[in-house]
Image (cartoon, rainbow, N blue to C red; front, side):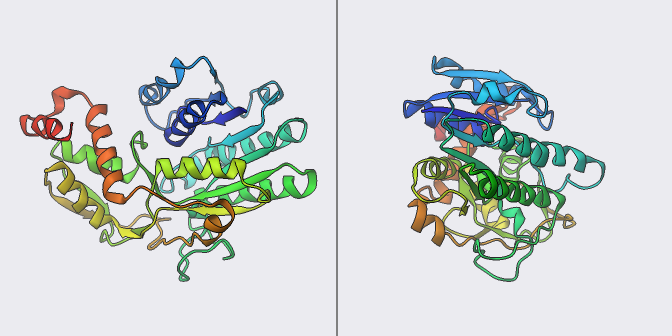
Length: 331
């Protein structure tokens, strides 16, 4: 298959493109290198992809690119691009969220209407659409009530997918990701910050009391869900939760990382942030039934893989002797 992956230099997009290439597909990747975090990190994510002859890369803003040539002969579209981050989606920055998460998705869908070969358009959505629900586990049948501007834009993108499916037959599927982690995780995300604090012997900062719970999902399980969504029958127009197997508190995650790293640093608690949801626990019945999805990576194994990656990401001269010894242990 010829595949298009947007946001290919990002956390999930780069992993997904690698899986597609390993499975024998041709991949065109697009990324605009939005300055949400340093470009060198995204270039690192692309390094492996660039080795493949079946991979082509286009740098550009999806708001302005001519999309029809990119869609030519494409069978699967994996729309991973977007502006992430719940806490910074308020105020003047909301414009960027509307541009990247809503307007870009509309342009992509509109181009898909005029493309002849598309068999699946997979939209990356988020558990943020649910908001602070008192009903657990969170099932796709619940009426979404986003608690942040970011969640509003992801829900709007889902609605656009449903509209283009209903009106024009674009074969859309939306996947609601639940707190994805693993190697290459964005530096603004909690686990990345925790790992970096540990290797630099800095305090770990938790918002609120640290007892917020999430259904953490390892990145390879997210990739598998995308592959299943591309190939499963009779699922176009559907929306699915994609999550890990357990709901765990952030405080417990910190303790697990301290055990994995062998490093203990102070934990400080800060004010709760606007838009942060207290508890998130996903129902995966629909994904299991229609996609055959089943998460396979345990939280402990996934955290160890992410810690290894964070140790490798930052300059060695910043590591103390104790940290260097820990690196050897983990090798």
